[in-house]
Image (cartoon, rainbow, N blue to C red; front, side):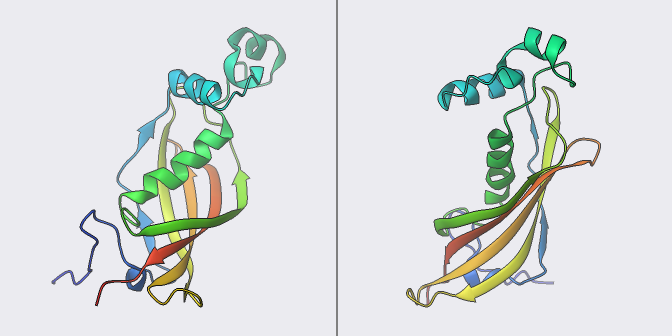
Length: 160
């Protein structure tokens, strides 16, 4: 069977390739470290002890250890999807909604992501683009759902 998918030179899919119901099981995974968590918190000026203070977590929090910042987890959900979907074809992210975190991520957890196409329509104002709704779902190494996010992106159409 011949693959007729037209990809951007960087590897991303054009708008026409996104069909509602299509699911991508991304091959890229990421084992999260406490260094990732500390760096993310430092870069975003987030001093929350839940994320950066092991003693506080061990003595005052139910998990007993630092929890990875949920916005870092959100970034992984979207970032991991880029290789298989929108590398070079995203014009802009239009919004994110339905963001839910179901279980925390800890140092040493490995994150994998699946993306389902839940909506696609032509852009009304830009004829060379379409709008795609992605539902990203992240899982840990035990296949436990970590979190999910619906994202809407403006995607280039294939060149004529």
